[in-house]
Length: 117
Image (cartoon, rainbow, N blue to C red; front, side, top):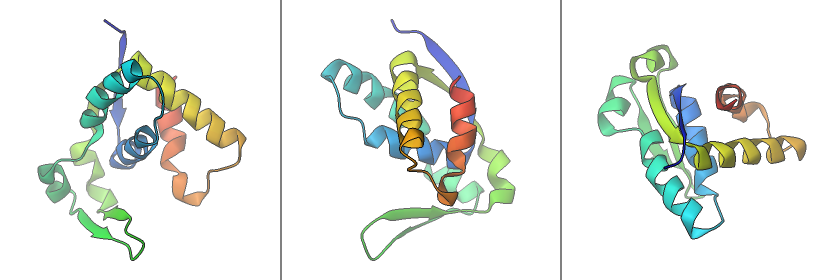
């Protein structure tokens, strides 16, 4: 069994982690572990209601979620993540940062990165 780490993540950090995990390409063994963990990051319908979340689709077909950030603490969540997932997130965030791929819309990555250490 792989080692785990418990992370307390905000809504934005959970959504950013989900986005990054959805980009995973690699071995089937790692994919199986990441598929287990990605479910933990997902926002439930109940959580969305608690924060006034609204899901919409852009004209380009991308799904977006808007919520009342003042209510975000209501659904902060402890997530027990396996080492394979942690390492993928660390490596991906570092690589994207080194390429200068982050902008103002990626503020959640700062908190996520700090929590992955």
